[in-house]
Length: 325
Image (cartoon, rainbow, N blue to C red; front, side, top):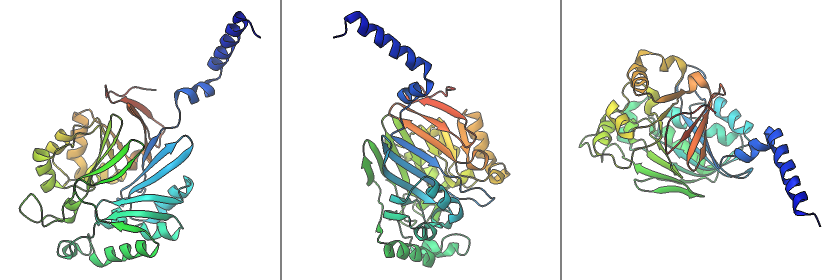
């Protein structure tokens, strides 16, 4: 039997070796994040798109893959999913029926990526078709729904207050969902204002996904919205004018903003108001067209962000000031 002194000596040696092995210490300090969110760069060209992959882990095992929107074309998202070994999407959420948010569904299915369940609200034809050919297309939406059902996907409708995901401390709730006619504005809205407003919570972290929320409903939510404060905002409508007003951003009060936008669009006059708002408010902003894929790795008490340029910022949800790693 080893004496007490010998045991202490061995502990000291192993501890010292741990300090000499930065890889071992990194694994100890930085275990794989239980929740990772990637704002996928489907904005490689000047054409806008919106897509987000949420992965829930247990150790090295992926428990669930959640995809919010698909972007416009499969040529960007399918290679991303394949590269990340995503062969099954447990939950697909389409924020609203515009092609740049759902257009890659058929190509994902054609790539033999299973979609188990989808929330995809079918628009009212009288709200949708006035936007043809540039916006909503009712018949095209129906073909997407049919394609999902033909591949055995369970397609459901999302309503306000629905909790559409709740696993291992990760919850996604629908805060608001309107059909364009039955709205609190007492007037019709466009398809953008039928976007699902989603709140993701994990530990102390709060993330608001806003689809393409526009000025009319955004103005209402700025005054009357409940539970919309968030640490991270997925900026609506690709950060372009027509988007929710600055008062909405004030109400959300984010510390970080993620913008699914091409570089040219983000740097154009159409995005000037939103750019200047985030700059003046000292809100750290990540844009696909500038940084590529942007990943958020969550811990229960904070998160860190890694952009396509490998810039890392860490945040604590107790004191949300970025700290260099």
